Image 1 (tube, rainbow, N blue to C red):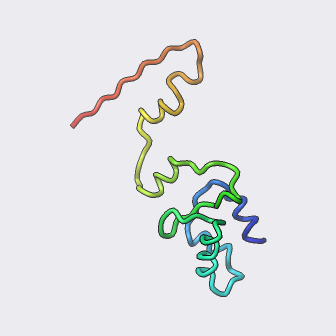
Image 2 (image 1 turned 90 degrees about the horizontal axis):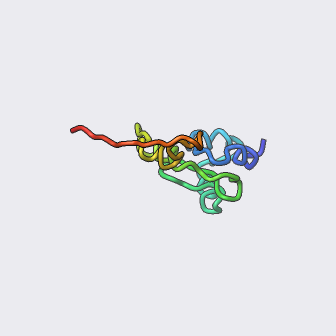
Image 3 (image 1 turned 180 degrees about the vertical axis):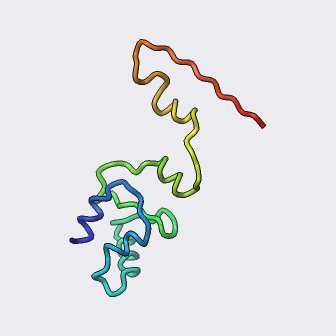
Amino acid sequence: MDYRKKLKQLNAIPFTQNHLLGYLTDYKDPNNKIKQLVDKGEIVRVKRGLYVVGELYRNDAVSQELLANLLYGPSYISMDYALSFYGPGSNRRDEKAYYHSALTV
């Protein structure tokens, strides 16, 4: 299967260099091919060894939350962020929700 079809299947999912090397087994120097793909914008280097598909092959936006977890793990999404993203009581319109944040040191 052509590597372009495999990149389209990845869509917005970040992947590692090892994952990409599995797609490029037909090439004599797959690391050089990765550099060419980055230069052409077919893939985007997030950090050393971590990539996302370029806009040419991507239909959806890359999840910032997933990228944050891959870049700095272990990490988590705070309750404040989740409530701001989903909204308090987002599944029921007639329900009022209140939330408080508390920290202990």
